[in-house]
Image (cartoon, rainbow, N blue to C red; front, side, top):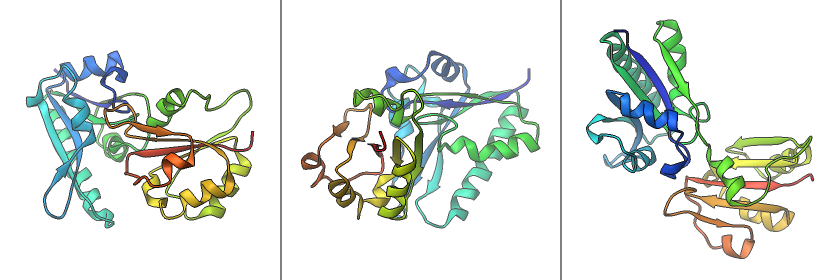
Length: 234
């Protein structure tokens, strides 16, 4: 029996938004690797594990991929290299295993860092897509992300207000990911621009919070799992 690795998307957080195909794959998998961040004090945190525990899947299959919280990318590179070796061994032993990620499997996903090694070493793999947070945001916000000939841009980690202003001049909709990195100036930009926006954090979970007005956002602490959708050049 030949083994295979599956990159499985868990969706944005709501366990009902994982696809039927993804859930069936997890149930059949012998091992399920999930990403987890690890602080310098050894504390572990994993949004993927929170989602997994809400699914009808045996928890004994869950194996963390520990990635230290550090600006030094060498730690993450080593974690992904170690994961590849584990998965390669599983496949050689004929096992079906999954590597999961919240959102979509090809969108800012841990699995993306394994693809080159899979191809170089002829490891059989398949990717199962899912719903990313900004797609859920469009539905929760009850506004279309794009219509007709609109352009949509997804941007992480912008440098400053002029950069965002330039992007909004060229696109009808701009989605900002990882906005905790721009928290120092993003609220000021919203007040100055007076653009229509949707803010969402922990979408699809019990901690979900959304708003479309500055009064609700002004004093809020922006967490890592937050997005902003700007409706600009309409």
